[in-house]
Length: 136
Image 1 (cartoon, rainbow, N blue to C red):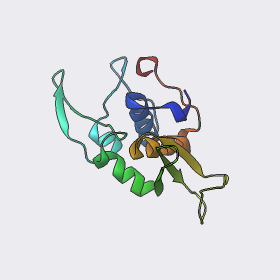
Image 2 (tube, rainbow, N blue to C red):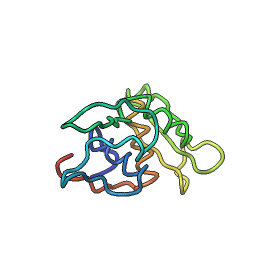
Image 3 (tube, rainbow, N blue to C red):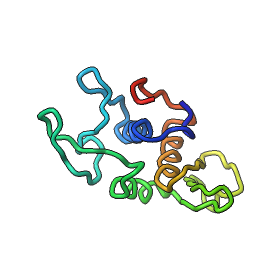
Image 4 (spheres, rainbow, N blue to C red):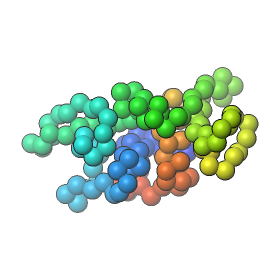
């Protein structure tokens, strides 16, 4: 799937994959949630099927997505013309907007968090990501 099209659980799964460096499977099913110690950050635990789990939704929860944005140095601006948000990780010094420097990543989305998480995923996994079928 194109990184620019990721959203919802598929985008959250891709962000978790970036952070854990591996596939996220649980009992033969794709994990829609990620155990707290696997990814770090602050998430609220909850019970599901008798197991304590932690919701990991960085594309909608600023408490989770915010620290990723800060740590990765992701810049976010609103494009008033397109009524969308743009995010960039500039791996070089200077401004990224208006250029396409090697090692810099730019993505957009309908919200600041979606744009930023797409940008983060692109920087770690590339412009196309294999997403488990049940998340697409």
